[in-house]
Image 1: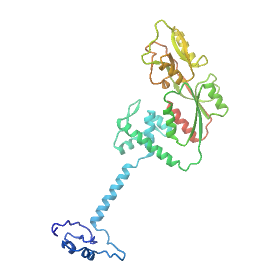
Image 2: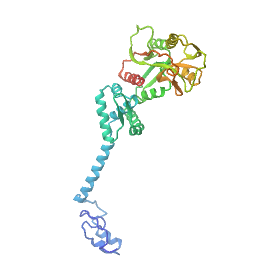
Image 3: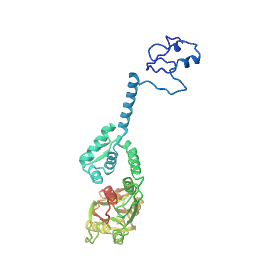
Image 4: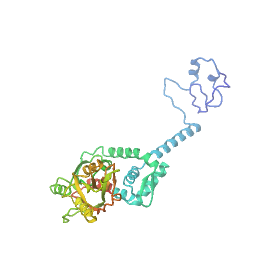
Length: 355
């Protein structure tokens, strides 16, 4: 290779082993068959003593400046506000900015601002907003999994040095919990991964007695007959008639029912409504809890009166199809003995997840 065709690299006067700093070739570079010793001889580096390079020239400064700005822009693009991501998850799960704001102890407008900035940073629309509903967009659905991982990792890191494990013992009425229980538990885990949760599913009277004995910190139950106990209405639960998809009653036969038995107030509401409507009925299955009654409905054994949230997959609301009377909604009461903020916040997350 001749000196004319040899690659020339602009650099400083600090030549690197025969590569010239100027546009011209160095003496060493013009010798096409020069021995290695000649390259070493012309090198400005002296191998047996410290080297003191010259300051960067303008070419090198420009290169390093561009690399530095590229790194800064990359970091800024990747750095996300964890609180904004948490707000996105809550809004997506609760389908409401208002409920997400309640969980985070802030305002709806603050949540909207956080989410708008997050969407602007990502260059994606994560949530579709309507006057009544908030739902995930296709891009929001794609972001959902990694968003959960981000918030979960952040919370684990923040709690890495916490030594005290708090316990929350909560009771929930057995008619309120069905196939969505994993979702409810996930909400509590995502909110506080280090919280020890003890959950008991039972009837209203049993849970209230357990709370009075100090076995439970809080209970979510249907409003008891005795209204003297102080609590607050968490939400109103709607009930309806559910049966297996495609199920049809036998002609001329009473309506078969799956119930919790005579002590159940929902059963009393249901049979009174049937009696007022002049519809014959008979109990064919007794069980405790929405999961058991829902299983009887899925199996085609009977029609069950269930909370809409607790109706299992495979069942449909047959109130319209069979011209069955409506069931009055029931107040769900929250009774709590909690005093510390951490467990109160976890309870609030659970309660809002029910709504």
